[in-house]
Image (cartoon, rainbow over all chains, first blue to last red; front, side, top):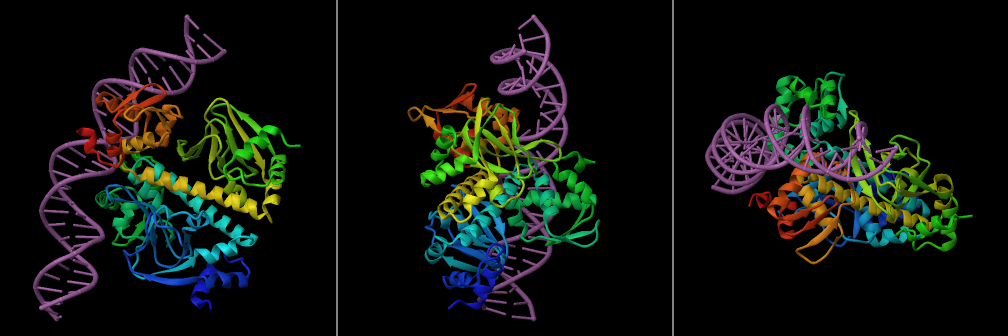
Length: 235
Length: 235
DNA sequence: CGGTGCGTTGACATTTCTCAACTGTTGTGG
DNA sequence: CCACAACAGTTGAGAAATGTCAACGCACCG
């Protein structure tokens, strides 16, 4: 009784792609689609975990809320990614809050109970989950490295350079997947500071900054800034 | 032909504890002990992965080196922890550099080839590795949250409060597991700044700071600082 | 008894945060 | 269709935190 769109989404997940079709169908049977609008919460930090999720469309933000109420961004993820697998597999509570950022956000929710039954005793599925967790690990290691960069200019430069770009070298166009407010949170800085950095680089001629798109004109310079070579910004 | 100490260490790992003894012995057969001194490198970022490791004694630092040659600390780990499992299970290269920090550091190296053979087809072992990866995920999420704290005082306060403490409330004694130089790197700041923070808090009467030990006198205040309430430091 | 490296302190330059006001856009209700 | 509210984004000014460079004390080790 699996919804076709659910099955389709699952079949396209990198780590589920290689699973046998009947297994996929059984996973899909315990799953269903969820539609959200920007700002809506998928689950909150501390809630008991009842399943994990795959992103079908849109952007989801994982964050933790500190005692002051300010959210600290753990990660952003887009279509084709899964989240909360670890919480499910260890049968714990969700360690973070998941929020939809884009206005049509579509998720697949894989129910915990039925999935765990399949998981136990199925080596292929276990291997798939191991791959999935490994990707998460690699991403978080990246993120830690990113946040270890001292200056926010370095973090921003690195972020821009890692976005998928199009266009000729010397005029690489990148699309910001997040509103600047959320981007600032992701970079562990303030919207004001982000705005100023973009403006400075724009005036200096390293980039062109439009509302949601940035054109990278001088990637060499940006690379230098990303490497913490602050003098590059002054030169 | 497993070395007893190897087997003993493996048996004490949280996620291997529940494995059947004969399986443990077979894992131990593909493992051996490694002794290192502080500063010695276990493996370097980018090297092909030939196994994963368990810490028997001492502290190991995982770090990535940026183009300037400055190391950025990903994580520090002590006895009872494993690392590089993900690199092995995905059969990739090591994503970071591992360095021994303490002068007697003892590791167990589990050879990749023989371990992977056991891994495939053994559900218990797969489950154990999933647990292990999940712990890593949780730790890195913590680390990301930690690094998202804007001020280094917040990071330091939080770090101190999370160390295992002994003694009566109002006089909690904690032991720094790292030299201050490495602690500064862990907190993504400089030794100078760390030194000044400790001194200021010492003078203010929040803590007592000795060479390798810190006594927390005013945990309420430290909690406020950790929560980013900077006014607490000025008050 | 030198040397090497950690830790500290001082002085100074930058970066960044905070608070506050202002602009532009979007979307809603009259 | 327009007016207005709500909010993202920008800009300005001043304060605070942090990084940098440099010098010094202090321990440990050969």
